[in-house]
Image (cartoon, rainbow, N blue to C red; front, top):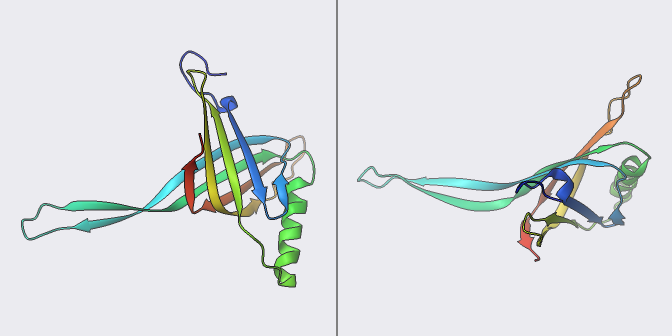
Length: 143
């Protein structure tokens, strides 16, 4: 629930669907997505430069606290499929946000490729933080 007119991280839910089905991560800590653009500068003879922004795709990170082998097992399957020559389909990520006014915004990232970048540092009395990066072709408003 938003507070004092501000969206909090807890107002966002993320659903990840891969070629193997829904990836249910027990403790998602953070989700960050950013658009990528190519910038093209055009400088005519008058010297006044125009800039064209061309959308490319989206990229982001997902961090989770390890509570079970979900991400490790998912990556092991991905790796096994790669070496077996399995053509792995892209996935989707759905981001649902409870807005300050009580409405809900839903965004879908399409043609998602996920890379398990860090299975986490294991150390004494510390939790194990895991991370993934992703790219997506588009971010489309669902509602």
